Image 1: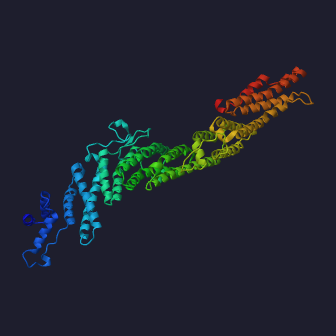
Image 2 (image 1 turned 30 degrees about the horizontal axis):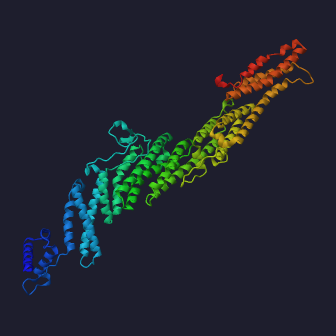
Image 3 (image 1 turned 90 degrees about the horizontal axis):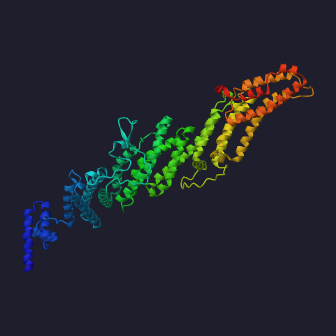
Length: 624
C-alpha cells in the first residue's frame, strides 16, 4: 500500500511537471524544486518515471519519433551551470565588485571544470555535443575571468575597498616630491627624487586584490588557460612599469639617437640612468618577483612566465641604452661615465642570480652580463682611443718658452683620475669573468698587471710624442727645458698616487734618469760660457771678458723668456748655473786685476750682477 501511495504521489508530481513545464528550462526548475523539497522526489526518479510514463501511454506504443529522449544528469547540470554563468558573465559591472557574487561565480566555474573532466572521462557516446557545449561555456568564462583579472590589477580600487600602496619614490600627494622632464614634448612627466636606500619592497596591490587574483589564476590554470593568465598579467602590469621608468627620468632612445647625441646631453642621460638602473633592478624587479610568487603561488611555471614577461620591457629599455652607449663613440672623456655604468651592472649581477633563476627569466640575467661585457670592451676601447689621441696630437706648434704641453697635462690628470677606479680597470683589463664576477684583492706591488702594462705603454707613447715636439725648438737647450718641464710634471703626477703603484719604482727611476740627462744637456750651454773664462797657458787675456759678456747678455736675454714650470726645479736650476758661472767669473776677475787695474775697462758686470742676471732666468713672457 505504501509503495502504491508513493507511486501515486510521484505520478501526481510528474503530472504537475508535465502541465507546467512548457519548456526544458521550466521543467528543470520544477524538478529541482521538488527534489530539494522531498528526498523521495529525486531528479532521476522523477525524470525517469515521467519519461517512462510519457513513452507508454495506454497500450499500443508510439513511433520512435514520438518518444521523448531522457535527459541525462550531465545535460541537466550543464543547463543549470549555463544559466548561472550566463547571468553573471553578461553583466556590465565587475563581478568582483560584489564579493558574494564573485564566490558564487567561482563555484560555478569549479563545477563546470569538474563536469568537463567527468565528460572527458566518460564514454563519448552521445556526450560529444555536451562536451563541445561545456568547452564553449568554459571559453566564455575564461574570457570574463581575463577581463576581471586585468581590471583587478589595473584598477584594484574598483573592486576592493583597500587602496593600493604606492611605491616609495614614485608617488606622493606633495608637489615638491617631483621634478619634471621638460625635454619630452606635450608631456610633463613627474620624475621621482633620487632613492638611496634600495632595501625596500613595493606592494603594488593590496592583499585583498592579490588574494582575489590568486583565486582567478587557480581557475584559469585548472581550465588549461595558465599561459593566457600569465599574458594577461603582463599586459595589465605594463602601464605601471612603463610609468615607473618614466618617473625615473628616462625616455626611450634608439641606438642612432645615442650615437648622435651631444656628449653633455648624453652625460646627463647616463647620470639619470645609473640610479634608474638600480631602482628598477633592486626595487621594481624584486617587487614584481614577490607579487608574481604570491599571485601564482603553487601555479608553476605560470608565475615565472608572468614575471619574465613583465620585467623584460623595462629591463630591455635600460639595457638597450647601456648597449648603445657601449657601442657609441669612445672618446676619452666618456671613460668615467662608462665605468660608472659598468660598475652598476657588475655589482648587480650576483643579486640577479636568485631573482632571475628560472628558465624564463634567466635570459634577462644573461643580457645584463652581456651589456656588462660590452661596457668593459668600451672601457678598453677608450684607453686605446686615448693612445691614438696622443699619437695624433700634431707636432706643428712649439709651446712658448719650452713650458708644459697641454697634452701632458691632459694625459696625466686623466690617468690619475682614472686610477680612482683602479680595481674596476684592473678587472676589465684582465678580462673579468662576467659570470661569477668575483674580484679578488689587488696586489699593491704588481706593476705587471694588464692595466699597468697598458698605462706604461701610454706613457711611452706620450714620451715619444713629447720628444718629437721638442725638435721644434731651434735651441737645443730649450728642447731640454721643454723635456725637463714635461718630465718633471709626469713624475709629480706619478708620485704618491695609484700611478706610482702601477708603473713601479723601476719606471720612476728611469724617468728620473731621463730628467737628469736633459738637465745635464741643458747645462752644456753654460759650460760653454764658463769655458771662455778658463785660464790656460796663455794667461789671463782681457779680450775674453768681451766674449763672456756677449754670451751672458745673449743667454740671459733669451732664457728670461723660457719657462720652468716647477718652482723647486726653477730654483735648483738657477742655483746650479750660479754655482757654475759666478765662481769662475769671480776667479777670472781676480786674476785680471792682479795683472793690472787698467784692465777694468773690459769689466762690464760684477759677480753680483751675474747672480742677478741668472736670477731672472725662466720667468716666461707672462710673468714678465
